[in-house]
Image (spheres, rainbow, N blue to C red):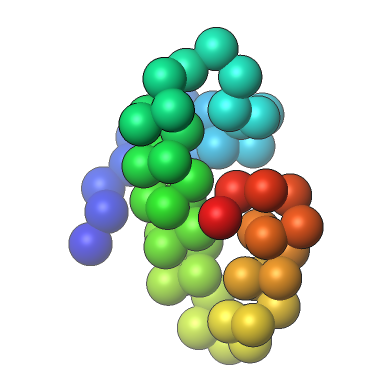
Length: 58
């Protein structure tokens, strides 16, 4: 389980991946995708994945 602080939620909403190392961007994108999709079990995973692919997060 990923533990996040309240300010992480703000960062996750405004994050676009600019100004960070490629390694950080890759890990942040994966962790964010995993967290969001694990929290929305009622939501079909393929829809979440499609959105993240369209935005270039994965």
